[in-house]
Image 1 (cartoon, helix red, strand yellow):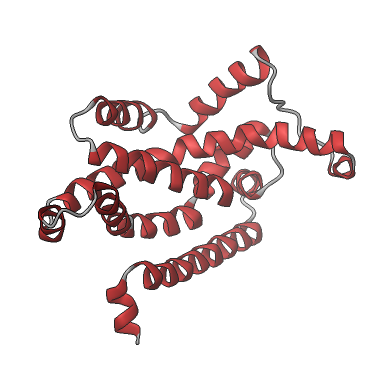
Image 2 (image 1 turned 30 degrees about the horizontal axis):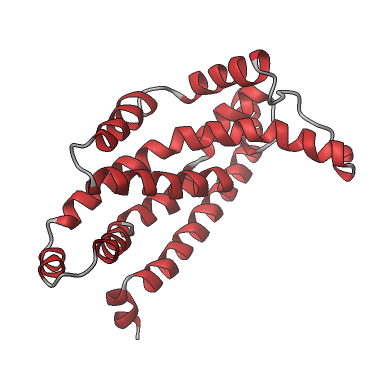
Length: 219
């Protein structure tokens, strides 16, 4: 969940920034159609099933058989481990990336209308520097979304791990749901709450680094 959220965060921010900076271009249309009209509307289980049929059964690039943990001591075991976990990571990225991409696109278009951007363009500052400044300021709202996605990605993990039979938090959540196991529910929600608190705390630290206004306020 952590790796998938991090990859989706950076990939979505890059695509959203590119789309917002090139509004009404083919790049903008591609991002809106692919991530706004397609991926955002496709449920997680459908993404997993199509990836399994294509990349595992047809192409045979990845495997859907969970590797033995004892085999990780060998190079073949590490390869099998990577071949298995790449598919669920890809599914998590495709599930989460649309929110980051569309959010970053809207933030970028809003930031481009700010007075300091117009003033920087009038001063003749290089477009590369202006784009870096716009990207940095547009990134701030998505940091909060990233922190929440880390803590609440248990919903995607439930589907991904359930369909691929991965012995993880999502699988145990499904087991607790089916057996009405209250102590297991309490343990899972405790883990989710801890993940959410830690991710929000990290987001606050990152805010202080990226936003001078927050950093000066703390001082």
